[in-house]
Amino acid sequence: MIYLGADHAGFKLKEKIKQYFEKHSISYADLGAQDFDKDDDYTDYAVMVAKKVSLEPKARGILICGTGNGMAMAANKIKSVRAALAWDVYSAEKATEDDHANIITLPARDISHRRAIKVIKAYLDAKPSKASSHIRRINKIKKLEK
Image 1 (tube, rainbow, N blue to C red):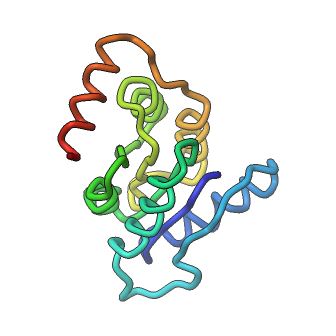
Image 2 (image 1 turned 180 degrees about the horizontal axis):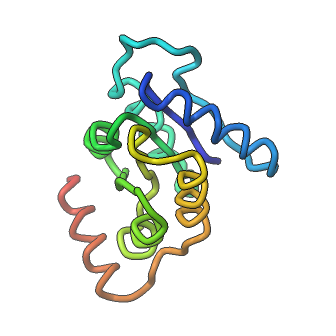
Image 3 (image 1 turned 30 degrees about the horizontal axis):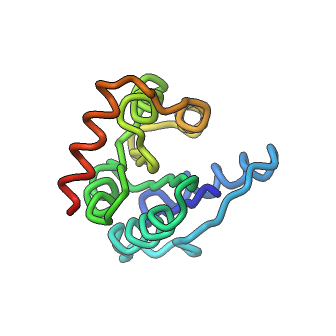
């Protein structure tokens, strides 16, 4: 399952991503915002998505706010979440391959709809590396959560 979340700054982009997912029969759950609210807070959506992803080992998440940074910071407070800011294909691939990211965050104010779709495809298509150096680093991150 892919969980989506966005605040007011990412709302419009999230709706376009949903259209893409529906057109291509990609399963997702929209955890909000369900309506545009200029006074909402990114932290609320980041935590909702991160908690779902943390409970499902194969789940992935996509969070969208103005810069992507706030969402990443909030999501990474949830145990077993590795949220990474992705702004291009390379950063999305490496987030998955090297860092085993289970959530990416997108900067809605700095990414077009078309580019966002390319980034999402790269994130979803990439496979986590089994190289010992990457596994060692992921294990060090897991130790920090204890």
